[in-house]
Image (cartoon, rainbow, N blue to C red; front, side, top):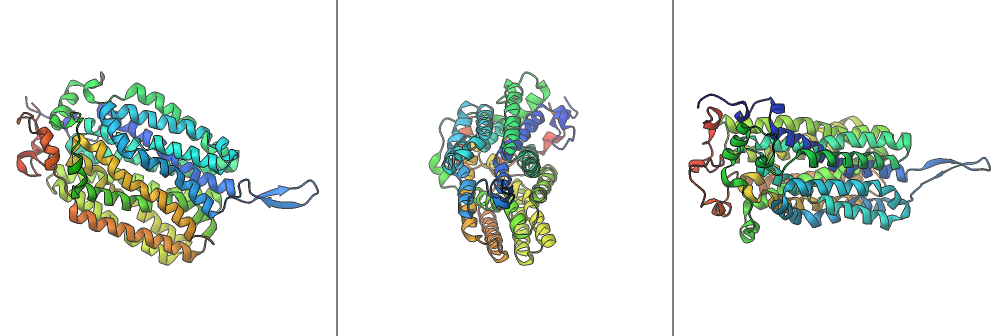
Length: 484
């Protein structure tokens, strides 16, 4: 049967007609909640520790802090989330591959939402209680990104991986964009506690919709069309099968895995440094008020969220049109993004002016969207059936900056001087450059031999991934022309 079926056109813009993009939309909203729940403390802690005007009964006026935490205390509180987060990355990937990514992902967001509702109570109980709650939040949120890859491994056809993954991951930046300024407004208008109550409640509401709408795989979704189901199944072939045995030795000795992990570490270093410290930098060093600082701190993530959809579409188009192989797409997009981030953060460090520095930070974070089309999708290229576990491994490396960077910044930035912040920016620029070099040398878009072993018994007439069909990366384009 000739002709083009709408569901099988990789670059079609009619996303609302496809069940797989309903799943991606729900994933977008889920990751929106993940980051809203994560970053509201970055703004909230500024309100919690700022000097407030107090009118005493004797008629005098003074200034008091509700929580008298110094920079080191704040650094430990902000990093405590990541102590728990790093513990469940690989475990989350294993759970997702065994029980279904949709189930574990939903539970992770739901429990984090409930704990966020309890955060004000924990803060008033003391630093130890707050750190404990944030640590447990990290444990449950740690399963989310690996499980997102478990969902994509069942739902994302090879020529749509970049676009589907980047649309989903754009939720993290949308969550940052909205929650940062919204937290500033809520803190000023209704008290800092409202930052946690509002976003915690939204997360609980999302969970109800997630368990109603999203299924582990297309064949378990009763609303998917027969054409779309057939397209997804045939384009993925046997790559969606669950694997109870994992080739751990091959995984941990693979240069491709370490290329992804090094890039994940580098991107997260700059991202978490800005995510946790930018509101304080804007307020204490550049002199912006809390509410305006919240809006400005969100601007880089607005740029990144916008550019993610463009970068993802361009990456897929380069593959579908045959302009670049999968390996070239991953390498050029990833390393190009890192080089741009390196340059703009160095400029931010030298300028240290309100307009110039903010513009450079927006450009540096925003252009990370192109890097996300490299390493963050690459797990699905090199070993689709192990994608959730590989994401768990690379995100373990990516979580280390969340632990180290806020604490390190707390020790470096003692007086909130410009010289101290210059050091912070230069360290981030150097880490980006490190990730760029490692990824350029070791990255690949081809299915790895150790991943192909588990697929060798499958029928040869099933479509293969674009990197392995007939032994080279440019085949498989015929899927755009006909569907029989």
